[in-house]
Image 1 (cartoon, rainbow, N blue to C red):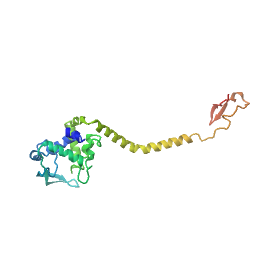
Image 2 (image 1 turned 30 degrees about the vertical axis):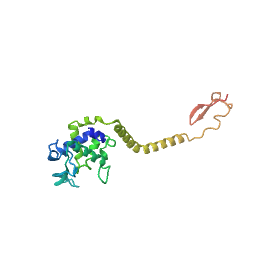
Image 3 (image 1 turned 120 degrees about the horizontal axis):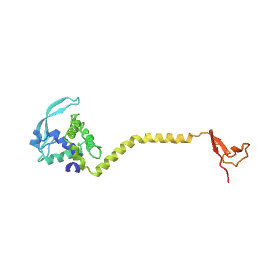
Image 4 (image 1 turned 30 degrees about the horizontal axis):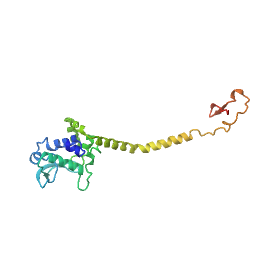
Length: 220
């Protein structure tokens, strides 16, 4: 929780990743190398070679050998995972930006953002969310800072306003045009003129506009 808060990530997603990747800390990789997130490469020059399952572009599963980072502690593994999510790849530092609390409106969205990025398994996000729900890991997210919450609200509003501004502008213009052209008949020239004598005494102070009988304005 401390590491995720420092890096503006969802604790529930990090915990779900650790569970899925390490099989609750029972996998050979986590036992031998303290690698709880299946991160490949070397850490301070240390690594182990393990067999791993991958998926090709067509979704077909296959087994291969790969080099994985070996950490001195579980904490080092957690911190490195947070670093990877916050700094992305060498060519794209925002590669995992969909997992950041100021971008993802919920842990569900953050988990789904890992499906096509962190793992070759397209069902990866669904697996993480299933674990989050099963073990009620969302309770770990209650420590989200106010700045993260405000950022999410702002991101949501911008998204909504971006799609509605144009429609509102068109509607406003249409309403303005409707108000301008609603009464397109000219007013009688003598509405505000001096009273003239009428043969009908009952209509001396009345005038008819658009079939509506109105009282004339009498000058004092």
